[in-house]
Image (cartoon, rainbow, N blue to C red; front, side):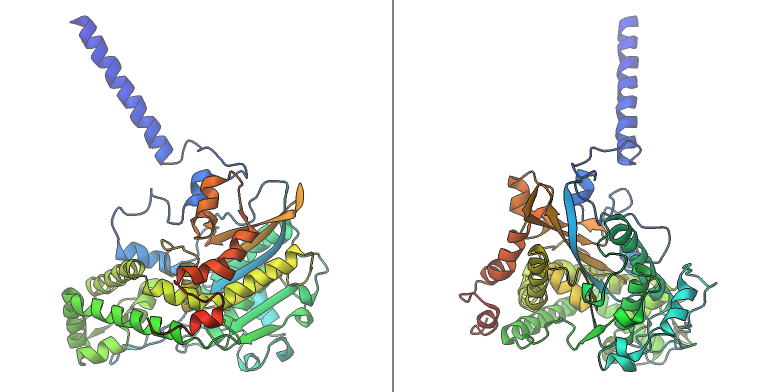
Length: 480
């Protein structure tokens, strides 16, 4: 009997110790094994947030908080991580603009009262905010290609205009720029102290929010930069397709994708009921409310912690917001499954990815121009690029999202060059379509440049089941 009691006691203690060990590992109190580059081998592969904090099932409020990207503590990131014998030789950064005022207003509701002037002692705060405003005030118009020269370099309206960048949006990109400065300038010396104008490549769409976001990141990256060395190019297309924008097949895929979205919405009876309730609150037809894209305005209320709109007939509430956001989550899931958006993305993202590999190839040949490239863009720019790369599990681009392409040279084998791709600070290289198999077969910590080049030059067309071997032929295939 005594032996049995002792055995049970020992068994209970062993179970308790095992539970404590697992709990400590789960809470990251015990360090995990690291890869050769000093990073966690697990975190290098992870696209989604830490499972400790992420809900077990899709949570529209949690997803909305991630989308807002409210500036808080300094962010941990994996940019610039590589074994010591690798040298960083080129960086290309794609950003979505920061937090903005809504593009659409909910009819018959009071306009959202947000101040778009920049005030140094108002939250969210950044130590370089006041200096940023001062420096932007000195900027010459010659720093911008027409029509960018007609846009203000920073937001400055006491009541935000539609789509205008907010102080939150400026701070988000000042933080992005400072983070990249610490890694790429201070640590890796990507740009010399006497950097020249031809070592930067800057491009933005013709919206004030993208130009201002690009300037905020650039100021965080190169504080008090010399305006004579700065030149922002204007990109008319949100796809950054430059002279290769005409693509009939891409447009056909987009039309079919939009049709899929419409049919999914019709099947969602709870969504239609919610739109009906909201329409009654504001006193307009349901069709008119839906056309006003109310989620855009509601997200601004949510991100800025402002109550949802109310009228004499009642209030739009968190329940309505959750239903609409949950439908967006379900839409993204079906979008991945149906593959129409992927096909649109392969054609939509090809021109900018082709430009990306061309710049990498020039850097690999020893060219010292355009060492750092910045594209200031939109969600409809980053989303197709993520999809085309095969990053199907990556979240929809949040405010101030950043997608970074790094090019590295192996000092031990100078003719060998490798690529790293990072999304919001997470290394997603081995999730990409062109490097998943390489990661399974090779112990190398990065992906060979030739894999990326082959993907853009050939495999993107193969994925389209295209008989063509170039962008023009793929765009002009007969109907789908």
